[in-house]
Length: 234
Image 1 (cartoon, one colour):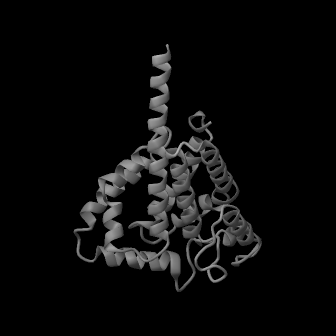
Image 2 (image 1 turned 180 degrees about the vertical axis):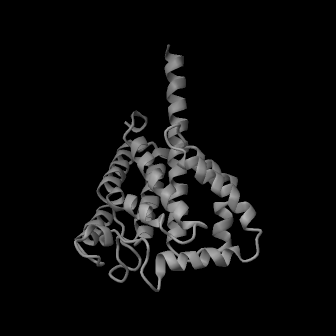
């Protein structure tokens, strides 16, 4: 019986290790995508087998979003061979995240959570306090709204890396503290506006990368929370 229990524990540790590494990868990938103009290198990374597998790990019978994201990665392999595709994605990025002109979806939480569509509101201060609680300060502090999608994803990527390091070192106290912080951040910040952001992105005139990834991101965040709250990390 002891051997059986030991094997079960080893399998659990392997699964935990895979999930902890995978969530870093996807948070870093989405942060890079929504955080700046896309490069050829980034698109190639998005088209790798690694990315396809990273998405597919979350597929369930109830949600085929991750299968679609995995297929999208493979589809990118072919599109990257097309002349001018990178420029099309750059144009999509500019139109959907920068402007000029009214955006179909706003990449700031305050634009969804405030009574008026403005930046640097109470929600911005709240997310700033969440960063500071764990020792993080955005590089463009006070110059760029702290509740920008890319900054929130960067925070999650950094916290995920901190959790993985604690796990590797056997520091269960830090691991629990870090994962609890991420669960709270997902509930109190990410899921309060990203679902509507992803829905608004569906109205985009093009769908090369960003609308698809907004939908995949929302699904990933929901499953990530479910996993962190499951017995796997109890």
